[in-house]
Each structure stands twice: as C-alpha cells, then as structure tokens.
Image 1 (cartoon, rainbow, N blue to C red):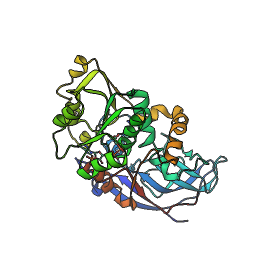
Image 2 (cartoon, helix red, strand yellow):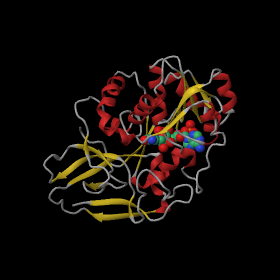
Image 3 (tube, rainbow, N blue to C red):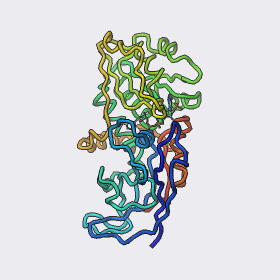
Image 4 (cartoon, protein in one colour):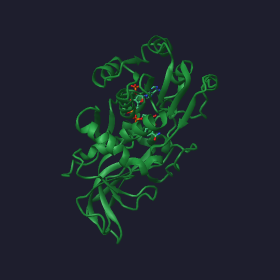
Length: 343
Ligand SMILES: NC(=O)c1ccc[n+]([C@@H]2O[C@H](COP(=O)([O-])OP(=O)(O)OC[C@H]3O[C@@H](n4cnc5c(N)ncnc54)[C@H](OP(=O)(O)O)[C@@H]3O)[C@@H](O)[C@H]2O)c1
C-alpha cells in the first residue's frame, strides 16, 4: 500500500531547530476506515509558528506533544476516501503534519477543508497570497486591526516576507505612505522596486531609529509588527498620537529560552494614547470569504505581488524553519513533499 514517512518531535529545541529534535519514522499505510480520508501531502507551509509549537511555553494552541508527528499546515490531494463529501483527487488544506500522508483524523484541531475551486489561482496560493501565513493574515491584521487611513504613515517589519510583503501592499492600496523594514539591501530593493513600498530600511546595515526619524518625520500611525525586539522599541519611540500596533508576530524571540522581556519603552503606548492588539488569523475563519473576495482579483490581476520560495524534501523541514530565522527566504517559504497534482 505504500509508506508514510513522518517527522516525530522527540525533544524540544534548545534555541535553533535541529533534525536531531526529530525521529524519521516510516510506517506502512493502513486501510482507510469508514469516515476517513487519506491525503498525500504536496506542500507544507514552513511558518515561524512551527517553532512556537515545538516549544512548551504558553501559546495560542497546545504545544506539539513529544512523540507525536510535528504539526504543520499544508495542502495535499485525497488519494482514498470513505467520507461522502471527499473524493479521490480533491485538493485539501489542513493541519496535515510533517508527514508524506495524513489520515483525516490526524489532527482534531482543525478539520480538513477542500480548497475553493474555480477561482483561477494555483492551489499553492492557499498557502501564500491567499493563505493563513500570507494574504489572510495580512488582510485581517492590516485592514481590520490596523485600519489604515489615506495619508497615514504605516511601517511594516519583515517586509520582504510572506505576511509583511502583502500587508504593506494592502496599506499602500489604501493611500498610505508605507515604509518597510528588512534584513538586506536586496530585500529592500525588492520591497521598494517590486512591491511599491515608499521606502525600506535595511536593519542589518542601518540604525532603524535614525532611518525612521528621516522617513517618518511626523511619526508612525500604524505599525504592522512581525519581529519584536529592538525594532519594536525604535517604532514605539516614534508613534503618532492614537497609533495602532498590529501585533502579528515577534519572530526575534521565538528561539529564546527565557521569558520574553517587554520593550523597555512600553510606556510610549500610554504617552501616545496608542492601541496594541494581538491577533491570530484563525480568529477570522468565518470571515475568510470576505478576504478572498478582496484578495483574489488583486492576485489574479497581478496588482498584489508576491513570491514563493520553495525547498523540497520532508527531512529538510527543520532546516527550512531555520531559514526563516536567518532571513534566507524571500516571500512565502514552502516545502514541497510530493509533485504537483493536476487540479
Ligand atoms: N498572528 C498570526 O495569525 C500570524 C500568522 C502568520 C504569521 N504570523 C507572524 O508573522 C511574522 C511573519 O511570518 P511569515 O510567515 O510571513 O514569515 P516571513 O516574513 O516570510 O519570514 C520571516 C522573516 O522574519 C525576518 N526575521 C527573522 N528573524 C528576525 C529578527 N531577529 N529581526 C528582524 N527580522 C527577522 C526575516 O527577514 P529579514 O531578512 O528581513 O530579517 C525572515 O525572512 C512572524 O512573526 C509570524 O509569527 C502571525
């Protein structure tokens, strides 16, 4: 019947992720039970949150239990079904896990969803420009929480990444002045020339505070926060009155062992009467159709630009997670597990 290869989390990473934190386990595929679906994984979304899930610090979902398959979001194709609403060949998305095959009941946390068909976008788009770690997060974070208004100044960190690149473009479309922050001259060039941001600060080679003083002389109205740390402090020091901080992620802390130290100038929230709001994209599941209605035409017409960065091989998943922390990805990082299927 074939084999399922799985990456089993056997120890919690101490800092960076290593393949040594996993056991590679091969087991024979079994017969599909009544009510079950067997899915072959095609792409896994390599996400900063994979690192959070490996740790046992308090978080928005239960940590992955040691001895179980590593949790991961992905898309795949149904190859066998004993569930009436799924047919072989259907393309689905869900928490397939770091494994080549997934039975539909592998994760009770989120049921499998059929990919919307007839939208004219490739299936992979549902992990990127229309995905939970891409367009959907950018849309709900920027538009619902950030609420940018024409003429305002918006700053986006991790601006060349999956979420940041889309969040900044959405604010730009709403008439804002958008400043990105990214980790290399090449990424900054991409953010301004290709994505159309007004400017981009290379935090690896430039003092962020000095650059923000130059680029945001009237302060920052909306900050789309992806990284935390020193960049957050530099932004807090330059908030406009009634600024909004969209707390989407804090990747600079995910490898930390200690409890997160707060920004030293957190009092600027008080002085600037600012609002800071965290969110998790899955809070908005009921509103995903609204986001698709907005994003699909922009993606299809090329008005919303994005890139995919694809690596392959299930065993490379831990190394791929580290790429996010090293800034080695440009755009949405995906792991190809099996060849593309006909849609
Ligand atoms: N709240 C939600 O529901 C939700 C959903 C999805 C993602 N997120 C969050 O959104 C953020 C972006 O996720 P993504 O999937 O789109 O990843 P991504 O931006 O495509 O990749 C992560 C990027 O973060 C930057 N980075 C890494 N370490 C950094 C550091 N110490 N300081 C500054 N920048 C650093 C790197 O870019 P540089 O080369 O520019 O450093 C890297 O390319 C993450 O914080 C993630 O946790 C939240």
